[in-house]
Image (cartoon, rainbow, N blue to C red; front, side):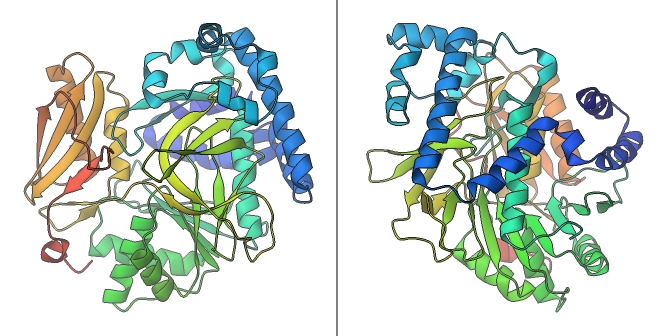
Length: 462
């Protein structure tokens, strides 16, 4: 029933959809995410006291069950196991997981339908999309148990930082509202304050600060670039807000310079969080901010040498039966932390995680637009294989697009229209150029946004 309500809400017109989501927020999480959510919360409370042997037994029990499911119900893994002569009984321990070849984003794109479990109906799947750091669209599915565990882990993270029921949490992200003049929406049941952090100018930033002071959230969750930009504007305009307990960042590299300025302006610690929509690896910092604690209840995380002295995060989600990802290469790099965290929590931890570094677009009006929201312009366009946005001049951006086959005029038009709506600039020219492949960096990564502008020349008080 709840799944049906969610599906109906997602298809409502803009204004009605917003109010429907406020009403939907009134549904308790235990009903919203089903019995799996209550089970996940109970498991996480219990596992706080587990030792190493209990985690090993837990992961291996779930791994054995998942591998059997893959062999019986997932066409891609049936083919893979047959090709490599792997039987379910061959993978009963975490160490034996290495017998299974890596799963890559390219394989997911090519074999998406074959990765779906045949014994799980479409009604029980939640389809997600991400372009990651490459600008290449990727579509996949998770099930209710995975979403429930992800939500329970998000609450655990807040609880580690002192959160209690009733505390207001602000979300600074690329929200969209039917009224373009609206900058926030407050959800009274969950006590969430959600901001639209796109197409920024002095007036919008001023109103965001005023709203933060009105609602006085105890926690702020944001992309590193977003909260850094807000802190930079506040310092430049001598603005302050009440002291929050923690600022929680995710999804982008948290550079030391950004962290230092945000903590100085907000007078609160920045705590970073690592994860991805695929839910194959989950790790976050505790209040000590000294290490990323790997959340073993969600997945098995491997650090695989890349051959150049670095290690890539490879993850296996233990809960997603709708579209299992075994040994999925995230493309993110990490270093293990050898010494224990001062908080005293045991278990694997990471000292450094290198995701994507983020440039921004500068509009002729002087607004700064981070790349996160722009990903959405590519999601519904199946012709696009990968894309990269390049800005060399303040009056124009070049969108380099590699198509699976060819790029139709219809797709070109839709892409320009969607990007223009997100950028909210009448004077910024958008030029689409079709390429065979988007360029790579020296390290082999494909960046979604590359800016060659000198930011100091285009900062209008931000």
